[in-house]
Image 1 (cartoon, rainbow, N blue to C red):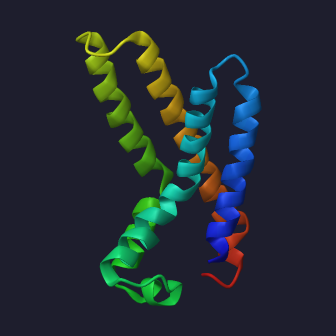
Image 2 (cartoon, helix red, strand yellow):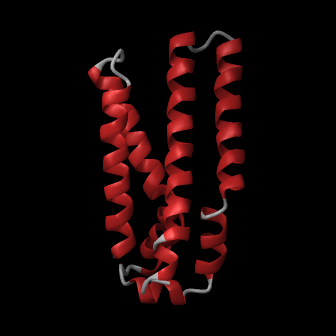
Image 3 (spheres, one colour):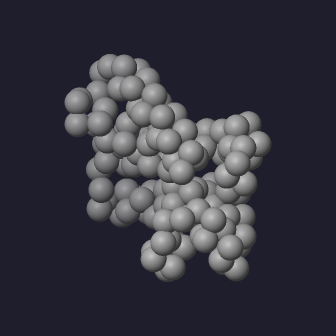
Length: 139
């Protein structure tokens, strides 16, 4: 899967940049933020290819793309506004927990920062798909 290698490479490069950018943060949080960015780079393809690979028990991209659910999942996973809505709901839940004093301000900031990094990873994934992947063999 050429797309997976491309997105993993972009994710790892971004994680290295994040590691050196967050110089005042602990090692554990640097690794957390980097892995969230990598996850954001892989998440859109996990929605369409990953779910259907589990459903059909195959990792063959041609077989997965022939599945009738592929188009629906691909549109859902590759629409940035869907990810923004999911992130807004996610952050709203944790804002509610913060307001009811179930989580600390430090935890809330970590969750919001992680959510933003996942969204940046997803955005970069979608831009890579438009610029590189969509013009290659895989589509």
